[in-house]
Length: 293
Image: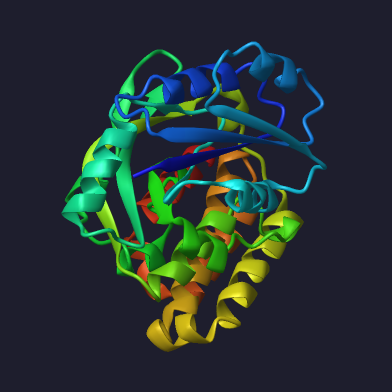
């Protein structure tokens, strides 16, 4: 297989070099890297220019958000499978070799996902709980358990089903796509960890923009409700997805010390879907609310 690794980036000049070098350092060298610079105002271009490799293609576009940048890269890709890798994370040496094996083992699947771990600033590695999940489809209704870094999609599928490019959906545009694809194809999950999500200062900053989060929630629900195949396969899923987004808002609020807002959106999530009280997020929010008393 020939792989196209699409790396959208915006003002990550201080991080992207490590990402690109980790991708270049693969056991399987049958790939290209397409960097789509989404209107960076820092020296991202200079950093990329300093990396000597004919595997890298660099494109600058007007700032249009990640969904557009990923779709832009998809149209330029030459690979049999596309992989969308974030510009602040790290690929392990086995990232593409395990993907190549998975393609043969699963008989050329339309989409599959390789596992990941979290790398903290102190070098500590924290693994997630996805190892026991073999198929992601129904699990995705309860939340986005996939990392863009771990997803591999056949090129023709990626072109047929692009990311939603609405700015209002930014940050949830990947979950929206995985959900739509899950209504059409089996999404296999492989347990081998092949990438690290790096928890750095820029990523860890928590904010609570109520209007923006509400707009994103509505945009996600509207996007999915317009997909007739999704609604046919998962007719009762929207209440779970909306409840998940409301509890997500509650989490952001409580971490920013907005206790009343956190309580309001937590109650709102339960009203939409009572079973939200059985999630780990619910317990975490309650614990934070108690601390804020």
